[in-house]
Image (tube, rainbow, N blue to C red):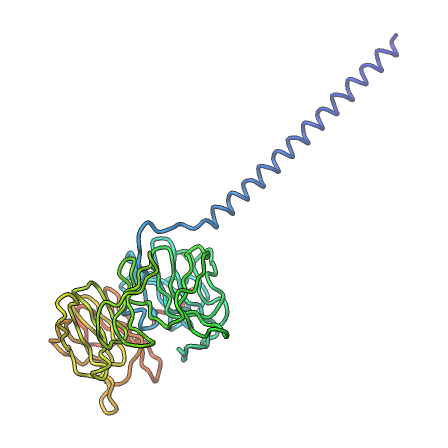
Length: 357
């Protein structure tokens, strides 16, 4: 009888030990599932795209026509740092609080509330801004603090412009050469929009404005909602800047690239300067431009009504980018970047923000 009781107790002990092991195993499996679920949730949240609620435009037309090396948004200036091979940095509008965001050499910078968009060109050296010196993985998105890099298009591209939740840009491949594309800010929906080489820099809400390229130089409006292109002004223009139908600037090809302003409804074009212009930028009530001349090239400025002409610097300059406090431009020969104040333009200061880790 005693032996039977011992065997029974041993069975109960063994059963209890088995149940404890089983419970621990179930608990371990449950913990593993929780951990894996947490990792999956974290990865999903990290990779989740935050979309714009309106037709946000990522940079000014004038800056994007000039390689988009500076982009000011919500008090922060994102820029290609010339002291660090044009890698992506941020600072405030006065040049303080310098921060390195990533090691990519960048141009055509756009920004919204959550992200920075740019063309990556890590094969470019600091002295070159040539069209076809791009590496792969050209169109990128990164968070405003320099994290979570995402490739939107791995092919070479240029003239990238943010409109709402899409980036429009000129895409290059060996089969079709240069054509107009768009891609979602989540990297989805990459689509060829047009076979034509169209500038997308001048944006106004859901629209961008471009000169014609194949049969005429008229001013066209592209609607990003309907994907329709409409001729809105009969002219022979180049690189238009449109801030409203009553406020249109363009280089007039028929006048040797003189700068013209017009009000489309009234159709009263006015030549602001007879100088032949290589490039220009409009900011507030002023226009900054590079005057073409074999004998007297110069960086100049006028008011947007053509008055108050001022020569800022003699010589050839490129990449005129404007922020709220400064006008930046690059000496064409030396590649030195300078800036002057928007409130009192005149004295040129070499731009050397330094290098941050």
